[in-house]
Structures are given as structure tokens and as C-alpha cells.
Image 1 (cartoon, rainbow, N blue to C red):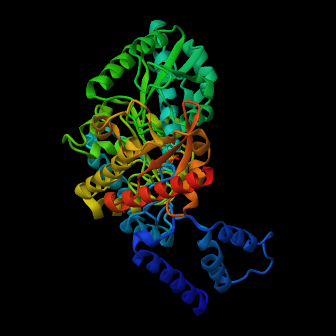
Image 2 (cartoon, rainbow, N blue to C red; image 1 turned 135 degrees about the horizontal axis):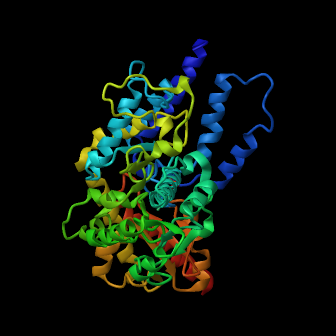
Image 3 (cartoon, protein in one colour; image 1 turned 120 degrees about the vertical axis):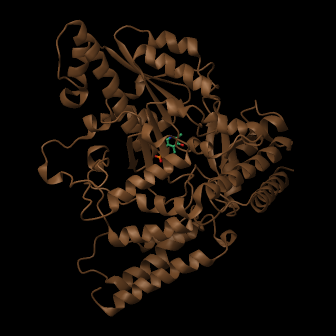
Length: 515
Ligand SMILES: *Cc1c(COP(=O)(O)O)cnc(C)c1O
């Protein structure tokens, strides 16, 4: 610190953090007033100052102007937008240490820092939390989120299926070839493999998967839906096999392990994944799972209450790669996701930094740890493993199971309330009775108002309460609304009472306006 007033500013900001820690959850606003946002925007300078304001004025500006214009997604348990998650106390404490010590976790240098060892340990604990056999997943890394994990998954899949096709072909020609996608690029490798098409076959993909396809050179148009019907998330295995059979074509099959609008799972048993696995093996395809938030269903047990949800994430150990998010249901700060791959060494073929001696690793104490910069997108990387490690040891298996159960119980209460209500429809309409709600509702509730005029303004009206925040979306070409429970603080009873109160209030105001 340069001067004593810097220290005073640091303690002022820490005081603010302490206050947010100690305030009861339900007292945190879900949204700032719009006027507060406008005020904050006005307070932003238009140009970089030539002589700086200094830390004192800057701190006052941050705490006085900017902070009041932030939404309550982490602090309020009633922020139900997107699937955002929050930050557990242990993760929050760890994250302040991450910034303070600012480790660059790119190269494995075990003589200079514990960072890479701790990062791998956090990945191992995550695999254990999710009931995976650690030895079976030698490819593992933290990412900036599920989008980055999907990019890595499609890049590894692309590498694997094209290189395999080259190997099959060169075996027939009795020659050995050095061409790989990572070395020669997609075009040359596809020529060498005599491939004219790469397709991604799936049922209800998250938009980030199509973005990932564009990034890795497959193109958004390479996606083909192989579901039973337009509004169904289950695979049609006959259609899938027909597509896999196409000549001069290689494929990546993607399972949506919980779809972001409905929370429904693309597969519902070990056997269903085993069938996909068998088809992928038969046709040399890669099996990737986008399990950003669905993966956490593996924490649940097989009790009657959660059996159908836990079945949705069974069999994922048969996949080649899995994308997951930590900044959602694990409740660590943005940005943090993870990627698991069963094929050792494959990610290096794609992400290796060649010929950069200064980036080489030190000797490893375990011999197993890769330099993260050679298995993922970034070279310089944040120490985002520390909050994951901290929150996992702070809550343990039982703590995370309890958290997820509360989120599901809350979502089911809301789903049941909406289903019974004469003014709302619970979506998809196949969830039409108490049994199906208590089987299939995970952490997301999708719904619409029966009356179009109300439905058109429903999201705005619910959010105008400033007591809760929901996201708008579309379902079967109609506007719809969704509530996602992802916050560690969720209290099913307290929070469902608040949500119902807001709904009833919106309805009363609506009836008042239209009568
Ligand atoms: C959120 C989400 C993503 C994208 O994750 P980011 O963390 O936003 O990059 C991908 N797939 C699914 C199913 C998701 O829910």
C-alpha cells in the first residue's frame, strides 16, 4: 500500500463486504431501482482521467454509485433469472484470496506454488462429488464456463473423429500418416480422411453449443436434431443411426443433460446412454454431454423423491467428454466451469503450445498434472480452482446434496402452485399432474399466463415487484416465463410463500386494470 489512506479504503470496502455477509438473505434486493442504475450511469466518466482520482475517491465512487446499481443475483435468494447460482461464504472468502495473491495458473510449477496441485485436487473432489471414477477421467481442467467447456468438447471430438478416420484409411493403404486436425488444420485433415461432412447430432441443444461449433470450424449449421418430435428432448435412435451411417461423414453426438428452458433430461437411464455409446462406437463418433447444471443430479440418491432426476444423469460415465458449470449450481463466483475427458492426451493434441520452452513445466511431485495452458483455451489463467476447493470442503457431499434438494423442493412447490392455478399453465403441458411434477421438475419451472394479454407483460409485471426476478423465454413459439432455483440460500417454505404472494399481487393488479 502506498499510503495510509489506501489502507483505510481497503478496510472500508471490506467493511462493506462484511455487512453484505451479515445481512439476512431476504433483505437483499433482487433488483436495483431503475433510477439507481441511471444515476450510476451518469456517474461514469466519459473519458479516462489524465490524472487519476486516487484510491479514496475511486472507492467512494464504487461503493456509493456502482454497487447500488448492481442486481442481487448472488445475494438475494429470490433472483430466479437464467440459471445463475450464487456464491457460498467459503467461495467468497476464497475468491478474495484469489485476487489478493493473483496466481497465474498456466504452467505447472510445483516448486514455486501449490496452485496447480490444488487445482487438480479440486477437480478430483468434483469428480468424487459427482460419483465418477477419478482414474477414468485423466483429461480434466477448469474453464471460464460451460460455453468454453463445450468449445473444448467439440474441439476434442473433432480431433478424435477426424484423426480416427485418417487412421482407418491409412491402415487400409498400409501407410502411416502424421496428419491430425491439430497439426494440419481441419481442411487438410478432412481431405486426408476423405471426409466431406462433420455433423453434430443432438436433441435440444443449448445455444452455446452452436456457438462452439462455429468457433471450432464446424459451423452452426452442422447441428441436426434427432429427437422424436420438435418439442421432445429424447433421442430417436433410428433416426440417429440413419444419420451416423452416412458415407464420408463423421459425427459428434451431444446429450443435453438438462435443457435450459425446462430442466428436462435427454436421457433417463443408464441403458439409454449405453445405447448411444454403442452407436458411437459402431460409427467412430464422439459422445459429448452438455451437463452445465444437469450434472449435479448425480449428487442425489435414488430415493423415491429424486429418483427420476438422478436417472437423468445416469450413465454419463460412458461419454467421451462432459461440460459442466461451477458458477451455476456449485455456487462459486463467475467465471468458472469445468471439462472432463476420458481420453488422456487428446486435449494436448489440440491445445498444446508448441516450441515455447519458457512455458515448460517444472518437475511434478505427482507426475500426473498437466500444465493447464496445454489442455485448455487460455494460457494465463485465474486461480478459479480455489473457491471450488474451499466450497467443496466447506459443505462436503452432504451439504451439497442438501442444497440441491432444497432447490428442487422449492421448484416443485412453485410448479404445483402454478399447475393448480386457473390463470397459469405449467409447461411443458406433459407435466399435468402431481405425480409428474414430483418426478420431473428439477430446478426450473417454465410457465405462461393463460390469457395472452397478461402473458405478454407477465415477466415485466413479476419483476416490477422488485421482490423477485424471473427470465422471459419462448416455448413452442409463444412467450413464456421461467423460474430457476440455483441459490445456496433457498428456503422452500419461505421463498415459495414470497413467490406466491408476488403472483397473486400481479393478478390482482391485472384484474383491477382490466375490469
Ligand atoms: C448455462 C449453460 C451453458 C453455457 O454456460 P456458460 O456458463 O454461460 O458459458 C451451456 N449449456 C447449458 C445446458 C447451460 O445451462
